[in-house]
Amino acid sequence: MTASAARLSEVLAPVVEKTGADLENVDVSKAGKRSVVRVVVDRDGGVSMDDVADVSRAVSEALDGLDEAEPGILGPSYVLEVTSPGVERPLTAPRHWRRNVGRLVTVVLHEGPNVTGRVTAADDEKVVLDVDGTERILPLPDVVRGTVQVEFSRKGEEDDA
Image (cartoon, rainbow, N blue to C red; front, side, top):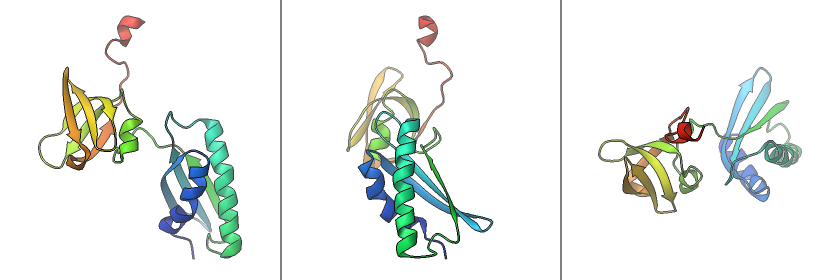
């Protein structure tokens, strides 16, 4: 029997937090006889390769300890993958918005049309967007999610080149 993602999240969240990162997601899937444990982490300022290595070591030790305490919980063997979230990750938590200040986003609201603008500020209660030169304050309870828009060249960057 393989551990659930919820059970692993419970065990790994404090371990990841000690490395200075946030646990964004844990996914457990089967790959033949092995389990694949995918751990997604993020932190303010982004996640470097050194950060991924540090988190990977800490998570690996925690999983080995869990497997020792509860033999077979991870199946006969497992593969650990530690990564950072991709640009396609939905922005749902206040920290997601804060980490994307300066980025162009499309926001899905509970009521009303979608809004596209550049995040200029964010805190635990609201996100502030620049929508075509007009400041728009969106209370987070009104927001379903946001999605970062991929920009190949930001307005003004071509002038800098």
